[in-house]
Image (cartoon, rainbow, N blue to C red; front, side, top):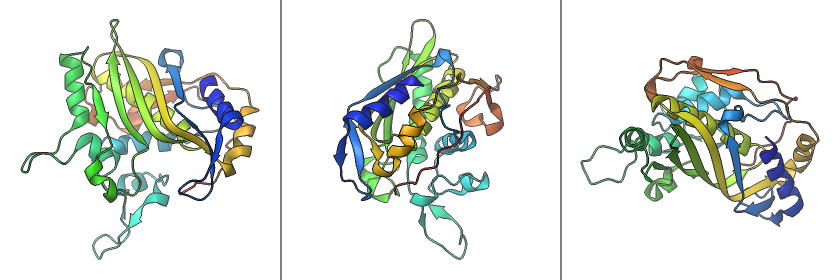
Length: 275
């Protein structure tokens, strides 16, 4: 995870002080990139304790179109609660809505000609990888301009592209327009590494590289001390990801099919969320 540590160091030393939407303020860089070799271990940050259960369930939630937090709440995951838009009704007084965010865009993109079924971008890409592995169109976008105003939070990780190598490998390149470097980015790294593993298995490939390119990547002003504390710690060996080998369909994965082996970390470092 030294690439992640270097990103934090770069922000601390070269970041520009900027105002932001949350009024907390940030230190920000533009156009940074980090890369991970997935054959060297699963890139889950070890210099602070990560919420692995939340990472797994959030990705499984992204894999299905929904406009609410019911699935996450059923599994006692509340990482999206601060962005939820609560519309209590007589039928669902406790339901919390977030609008047509990632799952809807990945699996049920609207805006096609009237009468057309929503587009399942992820299923389309899986089919393309199997039929035309060297295509340059293995691309998924969450940035549906027509529906941005309906979302509780406009997508931060806005698109990703897969690349099939000649040796039967699968790499993923994700673009993130905005990255909360202390709280959000470690989640994003693990989530897209996990997605790459799931996609590789259902496509009969081997996970290779994860590349993340950032637009505005930043540390909030009230995360600077936490970032320095993290950087003072020595990274531990990376864990290994094991998946149930019988799963061949992306929709069939459940949390119990996703197992992390050998994860050791330093203690958690609490930090406030900027909403």
